[in-house]
Length: 189
Image (cartoon, rainbow, N blue to C red; front, top):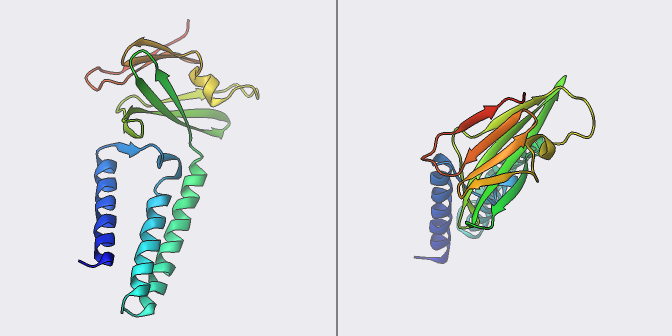
C-alpha cells in the first residue's frame, strides 16, 4: 500500500474508534473541552493534502475545504456557545477520579447543570448514567458560582467509588460504580 492509503486507513481507524466511544458514552477527556474540533481539523487537513497531491482534480480539494471549513466553524461556534467548564477531583486512597462537566443558564434564575465522568487510564472517561444533576438558584448575589453551588472543595469520598457533594439543595451522592443505583438529593431542613 502507498503512504497515502496507510494514512487514510489510520484516519479511518481513528474515526471509527471515536464513533464507537461516542455511542458507548466514553470520551477522550482531553478532547471534551473542544468537542470534536481537533479530529475534524485532522480529517479536513489530511484529506485535503492527499487529494491535492493525488492525480484527482484540484476542484475536489477546494470542494472539501468549502464544505469542511463551514462545518468546522459551526461546530466550533456551538462548542463556544455551550461554555462548558471542567474540573477533576481525585480520591488519593483508591486512585479513583471524577471529572465534572458543568455549565449554567440564566433566565430570571440561574440553573446549573452538572455531568459526571468516571476516568479510566487518566485520559478516557465514561459518562455516569442517571448521575447528572441540575440545581436552580433564585439568589441573584454575585458571590454564587457553579463550584460553590455544587460544593466543590467540600466534597467527601464516603467510599472508594462514591463521592458526596454538599450542594445548595442538599446532599448528592455520585456513584462511580455502575452497579450502584443513584442516590437522590436530600432536601435541607
